[in-house]
Length: 423
Image (cartoon, rainbow, N blue to C red; front, top):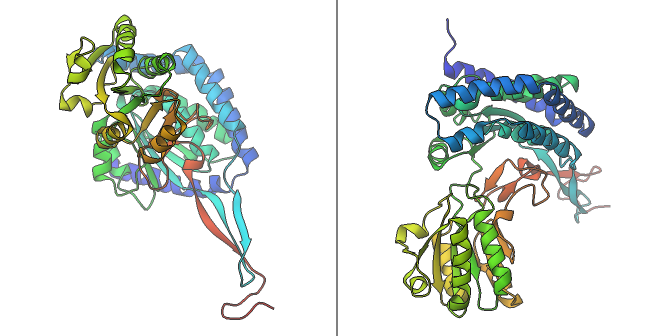
């Protein structure tokens, strides 16, 4: 009898739960050995990876996949190099598991502190980019978690080939293959099963478009680490160094249009708007960025009218909305109302304004005199990231190794009894 999707996912979940207990007690050296061996396996399997990826690309072309999606799907030699480097970098990072902090004596004589421990089983649902398989697998492995990876159907052959290399690394380190499992079926029911198995899965991380993340957030019975949008702002204050602010804003928008840390709205203080906007607009025009502005912006430069919807939009494209505001209060009000609590920045030379901005803007990352595109786990020194969270419980901002762990209390005594004075 053919195995149902639910039975298949239950089997994966049960295996992951058992493997999670093994990887949780693995030593740092053993985990690093698995990561280095997986890197060697990837290096040795370049031709197999390329052949598997070509199957996905051919299917994508036949199915009319957009050029941008095909580009994200491609496993170029440089991307394979990047995956190998990424594995070695994660192996070199400090292991958060087992770290104990704040150990202190209580009046009773007991000692109380906190120890960092793995989450258990992490389910990751993602689209298109096969290199996410390596990012997710390596971070989960190093942080002592088992993981179930459900990539997009368009990358199924690539993901299987990558997972085989990771499992060779696990075998070489004496760790069970179920520490990292790729869902082999492309049936959409697999996602529904994965997000509703709290007995086997401890956390879900969705990486993809808004539709995927909304569906997971709505239907999951397992806690979710996620962000829906990256509607990121830069506010150019009255006390900004305008030349510096132009460089920051230009980089924030044009470094890469499709990342969640790209600036989508530029706020400019009315006191400097006439000096700042014309040169800024000329720079964006050279790059082919379409500008949409409020009425006060259109009094200064020639741009398309911005609608109410524009302030709510994550373009992920060469489009930017611009608003002229009356000072810091209005800028903060705009960001907290229209933003997605992802990443927002201020350009200013006024320390008091910068402090207020960082205190009052309610976002996962708040920046001073630097472009929002720096919102990235690698740039933050995390080595890599499993995603960026705009939630306020557990993890916020780029989620690296520490975000894939939690803490438990450790209490040490020497025979003390509650209700008795210490000797």
